[in-house]
Length: 269
Image (tube, rainbow, N blue to C red; front, side, top):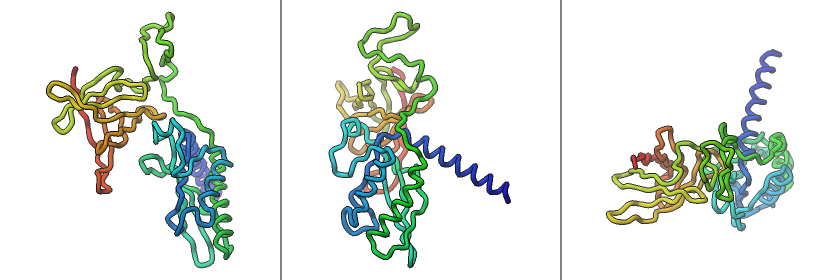
């Protein structure tokens, strides 16, 4: 019996550490104005309390509808999205806190916070504070992810390459993925040719025409290695480069809940 309990403790501890590492790589938490189990915005001040409790535990929060920080405007995947769900019984109010990434993947689920209070506001606040005890256990500290090899990347802000660095070349930003193009690259998708061009924010994407090219959108590099956000109308979504250098786009097909995974096949220049 003791051995079983020990195994359970180890499993729970490893799960907490894994969640902690993932959550720490996000800079912000976006709190919605209204939760699904409530009839109006910030009913019983539950949403405001959520924001306060996240900030109390070291998170930088933004309420949905407020002006976003500049870096969050450029890269929506810097933020986690908070949600609170209700699963109450006859005499008990139960609330659970979730944190999701920009692709709606649940990265963290709190313990079930409970309250036996009869008055709604008191019960919601007590249950939410109880659920946040497991958020506190994350001991959140914003820690941007660095991948193996990042320590060898040269950052040159002045345009001058250090003379003692062998093989270094002038760069504008950190290249976290060797398969990502360093200047310009061509890809084919749906019988069309697209061009990615290096920019300070990531890449611009253009569609090649007969004798010119047309701007399609922007590819923003996130704080996570080899993770990009493509903003280009119906082609908007999450993207990355695979081992062959192809540009892989994951997006929700408009008008449906279907997740499409599209491959922009790299062409030889």
